[in-house]
Each structure stands twice: as structure tokens, then as C-alpha cells.
Image (cartoon, rainbow, N blue to C red; front, side, top):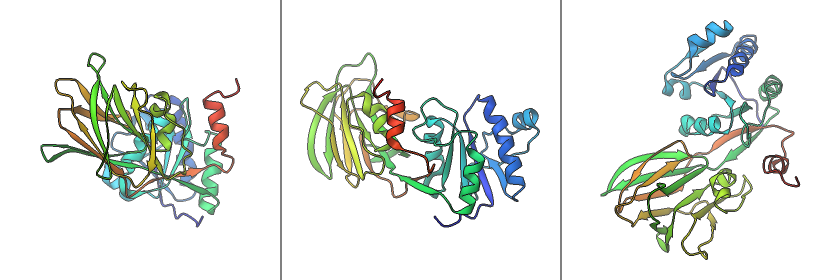
Amino acid sequence: MEKLQVRRVGVLVKPNQPEALRTICRLVEWCSGRDIQVAGGPRLRREEIESATGCHVEALAHDELVKHTDLFVVLGGDGTMIGAARLIGDAETPVLGVNFGTLGYLADFTVEDMLPALELVLAGDYTVDRRLMLSATVERGGQSLMHDRVLNDVVISKSALARIVEIETRIDQKFVNRFRADGLIISTPTGSTAYNLSAGGPIIYPSMNAVCITPICPHTLSNRPLVVPDDAEFELTLKTPREEVALTLDGQVGMPLEYEDRVRVRKSRTGFNLIQAHTRNYFDVLRNKLKWGR
């Protein structure tokens, strides 16, 4: 890769993680010796960081942080990384993930690896793993109610007390099926090891240009997961009235759905640029996290 000109590093931190505060201080010290600023978003607990570590981290408004940051360092697990993907939006700024979580499908680096990895980034000796993201829009009565991007999945699901729901599904304006199920998952390759896998969907290699649609506990057992090209456009219409149904994006944000609401899902025009460790082997990750052979 070409050398990345880094003048400001944006830091995103998993909440309630004391070790992450000490790691921020190491990052600030490393950056200050290279004339690089470190900044966080408006929700960064700047005073707590300064009190606990003595290190100063600039706090910027969200738009300013995204616009004027050359590299993001995320201190957390996969949930923090997923939140970062939506926060960065269309900027496509490279992200280096430092794992403080339990899974680590996305956060490649350990705390000990962080500074050596940053040295390699400044030297241009790094690899970017570009991950597919999806764009989701909710429409009601011809009006758009919600629009966001996802790194993992778009999920329509019923509440615990609701009966089975019916979701009319079209792909590229072609009728596919009226799925009668507990819900429906549209998953990226990145999200294929999340809810999609729990619902019986396939694992899709991260660099594949594909999207998977997986029914959750379908009424008809022949309704199986379907893998389609990533440029397919989905239209999902809720056809069941008087039931509690919700849309969830990446398991982090969402809204309740009503009868005849439409959810349109398509490939996002921008992706998530993940800086990858040279030692990373996706199959090692799968064996470790899914406990294959144990």
C-alpha cells in the first residue's frame, strides 16, 4: 500500500474498559513523538481519561472528527468496530482495531501489537481488507422514516409474544417468496458469522461479493438461506398486521415496523476499510472462535 499521510488519529473506545484508558495514553505518547494529533468524538470521556492517565485527547464534534481524521484506532471488540463502521459513514477512513472484546472477528490486533502495527502503517507496509456494507431504508406510506448503513446485517423479527410473521420478499423487483417465519436476516459476508450463522445460514468468506438472505425459524422447512450477488436490491414488505415486529440494524439501532412497511436494502456505495494484520488467517479465526476440532 502507499504511505498513509497521518496528521490526526481518531480514537473510538469501548465503554467501561479501564485498560483502554491506559492504552489511549500509550497511543497519545506515541503520536506526540511523531507530530500526530489524537482526537475522539463528543461522547469521549475526555475528563475521565485526563484524570486517570494525565493524557490529553482532543474532543471533536462527530462531523469534524470524521472529516479531519486520517486513521481511526478502535479500542474494543466487534461491537465497537461495528459501531465505528456506521460512525465513519461515507468517509471510508482506514480503521485499525485493537481487541478488548471476546470475539475479535474484526479487531485484528492485540494491545501489544498496536504500536508496531502503527509503525508499519506509517511506512506503507500494511493491507486493507475492504468489507461490504449495506444501505437500509424504511418506507411507510411512500415516506422514508429511517436510513442507515450496516456492516453485519439487517434483521426483521417478531417479539417474543408475537405470532409468526409474513414478509413479502422481492429481489431486483422479482418476486421471491412470502416468508412465514419468526423473521428474516439479510447478511453481509462479515455478518455471516453472527445472527445469520445462528439461524442456520452459511459462512461466507469476507471478500466474497455476496449477500445472504436467511429466514429465522421458517414455518416451511424448505425455505432455506439464499445467497445472491452483492449488487442485488431487496424489497421486504411486512404483510402481517397487529403483531409486534421490529427492524434491527447490526443489532445496535432499529425501529418498530407496521403493516405494509417496506424495507429496501442495497449495497452501500462505500465500504469499511479494515487494516489487516500480516499474520491474520481467517481460517485460524474460525477454528478458534467456533471451536472447530474441539
